Amino acid sequence: MLPYKFPNMSSTTTLTLPLRTAPPKSVTLDPYFTLLYEDNKKALKHFLDNKVPLPVNDILATPRLVEYLLSKEPGPKVQYENLRPALTAIRSFLLSSPGGKKLLAFYKHLLKVQGRWLMTTAELIGFELYIKLTHALFISRDDKKLLAHFVKVIPGAVSKVANYTDIDRATFDALLNLEKNRLQEASTTATDNLFNFKVSKEFYHTHGKLLTAIEIHEAKLEELRERAARRKAERQARIRAAYAANAVTFSRQMGMAGMIPYHPQVEASVCQYAKEICEEFFSFNGEPETEEPVV
Image (cartoon, rainbow, N blue to C red; front, side, top):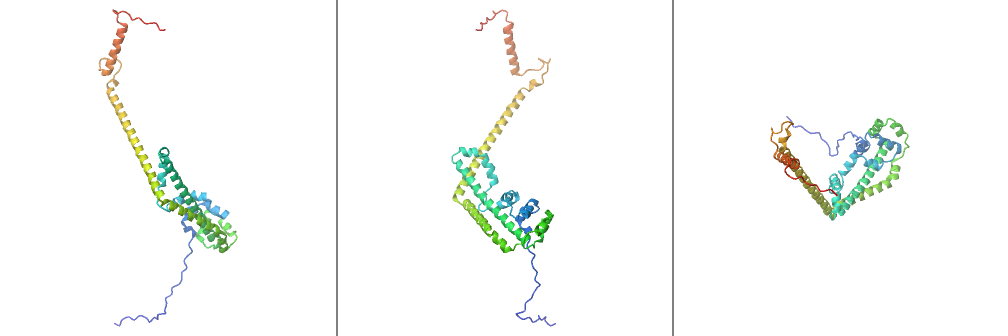
């Protein structure tokens, strides 16, 4: 059998395949759109009616978005969810201890820097998402998934989109470029400030002191809890012992005097009472006691 011969192909021969254009990426796939606009009639209607970004307060009022942003906070991780209740509990302890006010001031400054970063980041996200929505819905008009989502949530969205005055992309970007640069600069500055503060020596030492103060306070609270539990157990033990000591007299009924022995303490008390009564009313041989007049 003769060996197989490959076809003669010159070095300049190229294999061509039919070009397939990739479908445009829909804004609905943006994670920030999912968190802020997806199935959110209020947010979608706000965009259609006002043609402006979402207010920062509305963005920060979205718990899932805030949680997502906090997961990307720059610098070392800080367990804010543990610090807040702990500091609330030991506030009086810190105010009365040396250096406690400084620790509280440090924590307030940390929250202030973090809040500034969170606000500027949320504002930038809302503005950039507004630009994407405007490009896709009013300028290029090629995002069918986005339009379908608007129509699903707001049935009259098609007419509002159709009545929007056309504007070219370059003009729109030029109008918003200055504000976008301002927001980007503010977000970058806030990010740098938060990161630099969290990696500083002051943060390292003061945060360590704050955690130590919380641990000391928790240890003292645990000691007080154990002491209170021990005292409660001792008191209950004394009560049980008293019940056990008096259990003999609990089953006594009327008409059974002398049939069931009294408790020694009760018997001694009865004897003493009987003796005093006898001496007071049945002592006929003795002279009656003379009472001095009360002045």
